[in-house]
Image 1: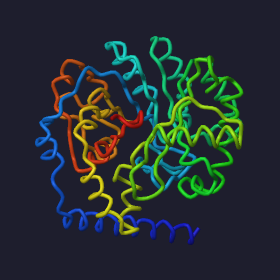
Image 2: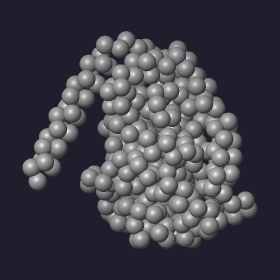
Image 3: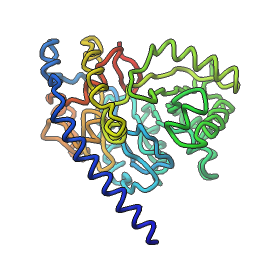
Length: 348
């Protein structure tokens, strides 16, 4: 028990030191303010369009601890959305024409009311998208039937797979993750996911494993499709190439590896006004595990609530939210660099 307490203190000290270092680095790095960059492109203030996606974080508990995770999710996280808050989400959804509900976490499947929530969303006739980390499917017997459950409700599955080789995947997501991910993908393929003509959509997500921007999404997709089909007989629909956003655990990695300044300068230098017009915060409303409302999942992790009197799902008012301006900060450079980045991959 003593060793566990000591480890906890060490982690707390390390987190405090990183916070101090993070502040010091940010203050000494003289980069143009993101909102000024947007103003120069004629895009400030950034305004929302009609919402098409309700993205809901149902909890930060996860069976993995990935080094790039912007949610800082893990097995020790206790933040879980209650059924009461889920019902508030359903009530809000029923008031809108939003057709897609994007469920995320942590591992969203670890929320005890996850299946009930998916069923209730389906009853409203909305498409359910689940961000599945794959390994949860094989982690425990109670999750082994997830492919069949997803199929039953026509769930679109979006799964992170950093690379089509074991070394790069395990380095980013933990030892054994690649092997378990391959098992899970085969289970999804077996019930029809990713198979031509099945209507069951399986998309993969690629995040760079270092301090650099993703390459061409189309080129990466072609590489992944060839390698996974050849080596494992696995098929999928699309690959999303997503830029790592400098917040939370990935920001800590940048600071510890002394890559923060270089990475931020890279993002600023790659600012693309075309990508900036299509950022996901414009057509997405993000709901935190406690019901708080945000412009995007990244703002949610930074406690940057929507700039509106309506800041909780229980008070949902689509008209009022439509009058807000998008809350911007320096991390937004990540979504507007190069081909741009969103939860659906490149935007330009």
